[in-house]
Length: 494
Ligand SMILES: Nc1ncnc2c1ncn2[C@@H]1O[C@H](COP(=O)(O)OP(=O)(O)OP(=O)(O)O)[C@@H](O)[C@H]1O
Ligand SMILES: [Mg+2]
Image 1 (cartoon, protein in one colour):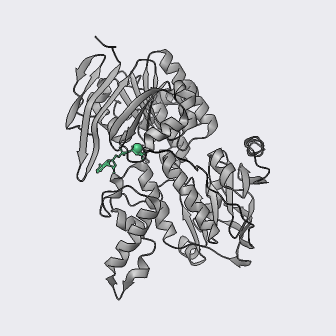
Image 2: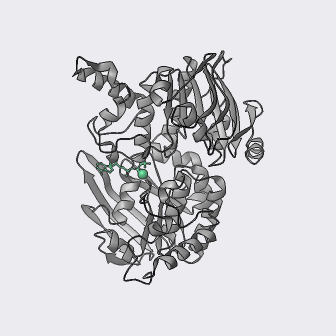
């Protein structure tokens, strides 16, 4: 007899039209361990855990829990088997309250058969236990993405599952919240809960995970003990080759000021933000989640009705009232939340790649399909997007590949000023390196880039200068020579 695992997934295979997403995948989870699932975008991680969660049905393979074969044929049977999942794409219902979302699907007929007031109280207790400063009565649509993600996590934990799966749980929460999450994870594993943890952040893996299973192209390539394995080895397993240059950046002497914001405010989160962007620069915007970085850039981009302050493009004051105006001045913005702010999930890759530049190849009401295809292919190649065809529905691409299509769409507008909000969120290490190299090329050709990011290493390694924000204000600016994580943290708390 071999070891008795908490969970065993054996020989799992799953295909979608034109894609073999999983092929004979093996995964063994022990009670009380945090088991990382690592792999490039599109490797099959989310698909595997959707099989476990009863969302997809595998054509082949079996699932054993504590040695017993289980038949998971839907979300409810997965839950009954003790499996709870935090999904990669947020699935909360926006027009319901936080409490309603947490208890959704178990309001009646269970021990949660409780009235509204009790439900709200229960939810509030959970939220408070994690020091979340969220009111259980708030509508989910009023929450920031980070808060929504925290609610998802609380919801999953509240099921008291034996097997808890987290698919990129920290992609949009701040360091402090990650701290809480990790504490929670440690408490749960002490109780014997087994946790499957998907993340592209290697530092998290080292901090919280015991073992790691690496996937590549729909196959499991191996399982390792994290402490006994180097980061480079894991990356080599993931990408099938060694990755040399991670951050590509040739710093150059910046040109004249191309974009200037003076005392930007939006009547809500942004109180006073001033900044300058020079030609050929990458300027980072750092700060905690909720500091007002995204909102500042949205105001500049014409997405805020009550914007105050002045914006100058190449020295001339401009009045940008909408993204259409912004595009006219050569400004593009790739938003933080691809799902809520941009992707047409039911449309295909081609539509999503060319929607902003459609005007260029429609003449006399005739679409130049060849041009459309060319543009789409150009950005698929440039971003190394993994898709079976241009006609694939974008909602079916893996999360990281959706992000690549989004960046490509805005690059297609050929902007002078590119604003990237968390550009590498959910993107694998290999693709991150590619995105950094592309950013480096673009600024060398004279583009100017603003990058909002919560990932310290990319801010520090890629930026000519770093603005730090806290509570709606710019609290300081650090040059590439001066910037350190400590200095950023000091300014972020100022
Ligand atoms: N519903 C679907 N229909 C068609 N293809 C799909 C569907 N879901 C996933 N795929 C494909 O299956 C493959 C695996 O995708 P999956 O989402 O599991 O990747 P992942 O490892 O989670 O990637 P990421 O790190 O980007 O989230 C991809 O090629 C993806 O395009
Ligand atoms: Mg995924």
